[in-house]
Length: 515
Ligand code: HEC
Ligand code: HEC
Image (cartoon, rainbow, N blue to C red; front, top):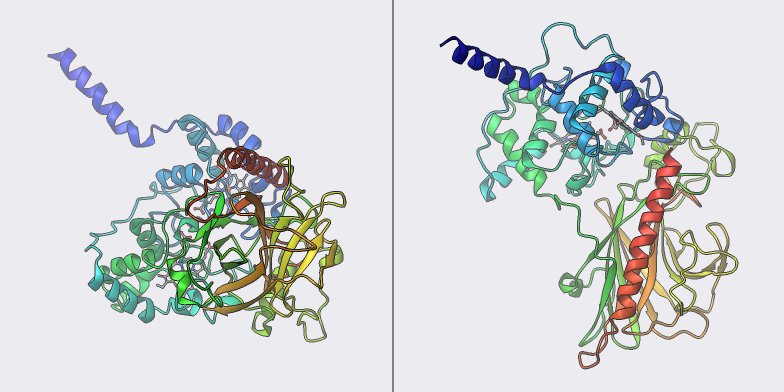
């Protein structure tokens, strides 16, 4: 049966070829690379694209062949499957986007091309994925063992007791080039570079992130400090510290009507029962100076009203309670690492400490009046013709109201009745704001009507001030009416559509900003 054998052989050959079947043509990969990757990673793969100096972490220099999201041992080259994974999914929490639209052959080709930038590939055997052992499973006992391993391995020193990246060593961390690097916020697993599943986290913890201060737990495991099962349990524990999936974007903060008294401050137990809405924030990259390395990447918003007053609680993660001299070293390194020229550079004193330690800040932005025709002010703090109404808070002066006519043009509204206060604990700010629903001089809230709202945040210790902010696009607040009346649906849906459109515009503008 020679034919039969030949067919079997051919099938076998095909089968064997499959792992390498991602066709790899470096010459074809150059075209893909020049089009999509060179802008950040540089024409020669040196990580020196046009906006690279404004980014932290920097785009990777492929000539160094240093890879973080690997299934191979610490310090080893990645497998092709690792590279496919990174290119398809991107590195969440960094500027590296995912490229799910590249075809398999384009992905294979660009992999061949980026490997060609380094002499390390192609020497010796192909990199092999490690054996990660068997997950003993989760559950309460596993989480307890994982929490113990978190202490034993001193994860807390960098990631903090609740995982928000606020450990005592956090202000001193730097990558292999001496550039400042943030300890990941483990409570936002959706933004981890290498994925949020227990397996992903286990792999990162075991093999470490080459080029960062994040140690590989495999050394402690081989040294007998923890068992293989305990490393898995640690991964379960880390995965339990917060949400693993990106919170759904609901576009509208529903501000329920309270039966009794409104929560009196940010720590009122009543908030536990109030729905929280998550809004992503991104670096402001439309106007100069741009912010490609924002600290704050989102805010949780809750609200209530009682027909006469409205209260909001806003919570966002920020590992430093600025201004804080413990973060001086961080601030100085960050200012040196990013293109901080012109007005917002901060001088250093003779000891090399910053002469100005900016405060943390946050604003809640509304149109000055409810717009009649859906026309919202320019989302970057309004314009001369169409101003915004702002609740401004910073960690030194507290809460006040202002009229905004652009990101650096504010007029205090001294008679505005807004009040509030904020507290910081374990890498998270909680801001409470209260105002009467009616106002003589600025926006009056009307229940049943979706009112545009947007948010901005500044991390002082990262020298964020003025336009160097984290911002959101426009969303909506909706004060719910007493149960009997009907909610106006059609205008809301109309506004939602324009809201979604606004987001697309921001994304486009940001993409352009990156380019
Ligand atoms: C907008 C900027 C940007 C663009 C465009 C970009 N990257 Fe990246 N890339 C980065 C940054 C930043 C990092 C490093 C992130 C880090 O160190 O955590 C990175 C890292 C990588 C890594 C290293 C992954 C690892 O495990 O360490 C690979 C591979 C990579 N990029 C491939 C590509 C390819 C292929 C393209 C084009 C299809 C591309 N990148 C386009 C910014 C970019
Ligand atoms: C010396 C400081 C330091 C210690 C100790 C440390 N980490 Fe990290 N860790 C970091 C830094 C910095 C990053 C972010 C690296 C980056 O941005 O690429 C990180 C990232 C991570 C990530 C995210 C990986 C990803 O996919 O982005 C996880 C999970 C993690 N660490 C868990 C742990 C655990 C568990 C421990 C204890 C075993 C630990 N770390 C100990 C500094 C540390």
